[in-house]
Length: 284
Image 1 (cartoon, helix red, strand yellow):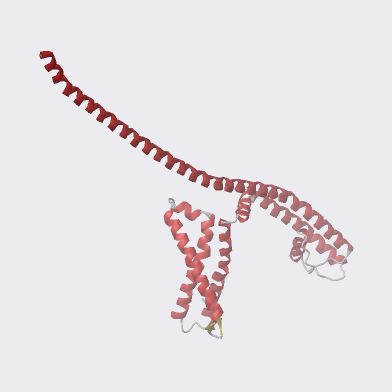
Image 2: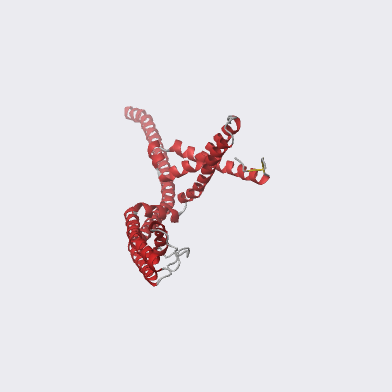
């Protein structure tokens, strides 16, 4: 796992490996607890954020297994070819650690809004790609023709090579590695830049409105969730107080009933004692 320098792992690299081990262990424990707690395991594994968690966690364990196999079971006659293949696999797996950053989407409102916007605007992104491809197929042959016939310096060697120039011109990036020198080529470049701005503005406007709407929806949902927690706590407290009041009232009612029954029994006893005296007085 450690990056080797002259066959040995440096102390700094070892410290990074220990830190990564602790983080991956914590992520793995969290994922397992959520997987055990959920009711539907299939729905849990199909959730995009959970898929990102799996893709971010698995490369660490796969790298450990590949490292152990490459050290213990390395063929003797394979030579450098085997080591190059193993090194390529390890580099690809280590590159997947960038998905650790995507775990922030679980706690970041902005990243959640971005993901929801991308999911809702697939058609707009398709239109943007279509407009870009059509314009690229239109302006690349034109600039190649203008520069090959009238250009002093042949920077545009082929039409497929001009596609790169069309892309960076229409997106207004302009690296400057390929520049039209002739006046017709510059006119074609100006046309491609203006058309690129207009063509990209049409879908981007719809994407922007979708992003704003998604942000407001997620923010309102988050506000409702934060308000729901104190309300639930207050309702629990009120329910507990009502239960205690009901218990006190029931105990008070039982006490009153017991007192009334005791008073009634004393009255009956007194009355039963007074009846013989009345009879003796009547006889006398």
